[in-house]
Image (cartoon, rainbow, N blue to C red; front, side, top):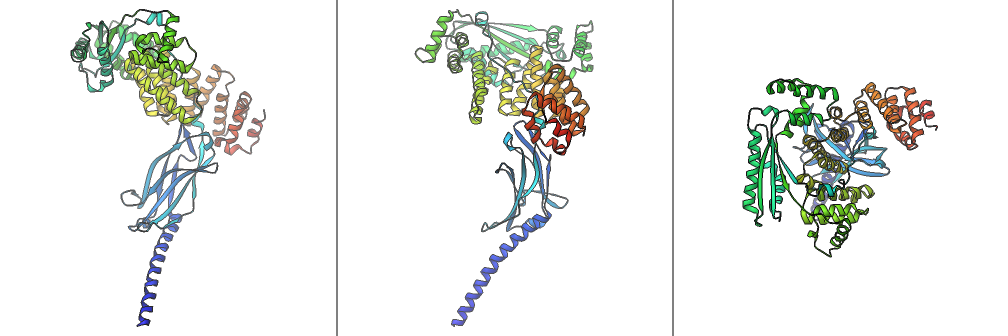
Length: 592
């Protein structure tokens, strides 16, 4: 009997041992198979920094035998730099989480991690591991480098994003009307639900506690809508909406008069928008000649459709003409500067009510102080007292200026978020190219690229002075370079004017598209506009490296280093010069 018990215990021990050993052996076989047969592909390689992120595609394929019910094979992707590790993603090869490609389980994903100067140089690593789904036991492959980083050439773009406080023209503009614009779909005169923010602004005007309002509604239609009465219908639709809101929301019993005006679908408005557009001068003159000709309206529309600028007209001018604008007139008396400043300080210190001064008065008072924090308090009081667009806009600029002076990244992002909040409200109340350019720039600086692109486009559609629109297109193109849309950037730069920024970014776009002849031409033009520019010289040196032109590399790299010593360290770390590290041309260029 004792012998039987001993044999039974021995059998149980052997069974457990074999079970544990079997699981461990299975996991070990899986990681050995992975190390031998998995295929990792990274594009681009080396990795490239674009804007504030490093974007790449990583494709992982493993042998089919690694797909099991009781065990799971996973792959960790991470980036190593300066003895630090930054986890990027984990791929899991379980049923439903991969596809088959050429008979192999495959995972393909677009990945990214935030860019920072300290992350260059670095390397992209992968490490696989097999895990027992029941007890969590794991076995790891050896970590393997799959890509190097970073190429930073896409960062060599030129941006402006310069916007500031509104000009202090209080005395001249204190009594200008408030405005809100509604846009319509082609051939439509119905206000749709997408106008939500404009509707909220309109309701604020309805709620204003004033004795009287003089409302003027001005509507227009595009030339393609000729032969209809859409402009009049749009004006009436907006006027009716204001009357309806007054009936529902106004409890002050203010006296309101509303009149409507129509800008005909004829040539005057179109000519005005063409003349202020950033279209190249020869093409602009040709389009203006068509509009000013004696042809019928329909013939002019057809001729414009055949012109090389029709895409711009169709995308940016015609939509802006399908609109109705409501103006609300206010009349307010003006106080002295000294009185305004003293009252504004008391409001900022919460010693008197904010509504003692109007928004325009507080804005003017804010212009009298150089202190950003005091300006902020004045503009915040202006927002509370009247809720009008200049206060929101200038408060947004205050936060933007604070962000420019802030070196802590988290605090900078928070300040930009506040800037965006206030600039957004300014845009709702005064939709104009200037305001939306500022909002797009704030999003751009914060790294919110899709939002920035949306507001750059909106600024262009709203129209404005030629110089303003050229700057919008120039910074829009810079963003498109940052997100890798080089063809779109080149298209935008057609309307950005002939400036240093335009030529530098055209040069970079062609460089990244590997059109080195075109890139060299634009960088040379940029140097003519800004002689001695270190960035232009350095960019020409990069072309020399990519085209294996040692003379072009040496000559321009030396000029860049002489113009700005910081480019010496950059060149030493730049992977673009990897093949020239030991060459005399490269070494000689670094001798200042």
